[in-house]
Image (cartoon, rainbow, N blue to C red):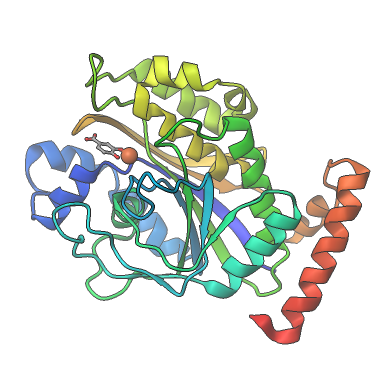
Length: 319
Ligand code: DHB
Ligand code: FE
């Protein structure tokens, strides 16, 4: 079966992409930022995931403000970089994993999370910058297929942190009911504290950010109770992007190993946060624990029935 082995949190500041694209990584300002990702690139090169699910937000690049899905799952075979005003970034086209994405859509929707299915989509810095930070700057192709999950955090109302966390759990059930053995990593991107416009432009709140990272690692349920207004007040208007990290966290074990953390201020207007969390549970015990899920019995049997039918469809060769 497929398995989520680790979660990665990373900021997605567009100026980081511009620094990479324009060869500025050795400048002291940018070296401070990129040096924090050297170990992470080594970790990723060693981990060699088969697929990455990247939870990110579109910044009115793919969807504009005329149509804003709350949760949109990229099911296409490929996702070209978006033109964000200076032409598309010179990064490889992101290849998808349509079979796993379709399976996730089916599983998660039958699990009562009504995602938007997207069969054609461009991806902006929200996705491509964290890809660079963890996978470096490949010229021709990214090292693994990617399933983008776009979350609305640009126009009120974004989803709650709790909803995001629960979606992470549904994603995990989806991945673990996919019959092929695949090592999957999940990214939560955006944040940390930043506010780009208005009287509080430039706001950064390191104390709040660090406590968010501590709780993300050790007590994520506490974070699910943070209301939108607290994100806005404490982490700035764009700090609301941090709810996306809770999707990543929800997809992991309750107890995780924090294997890496990095925090630096600022990059452009933003506090850069980065964390790598590994699932501590061994592969052999995964099935047992997954089978002993604490969900209510009605939900459990509905899930089981839905998953059985998914298995049947998958084994009939839709993948
Ligand atoms: C900045 C950060 C973002 O997350 C973003 O989407 C746009 C700009 C910034 O720090 O400038
Ligand atoms: Fe952003």
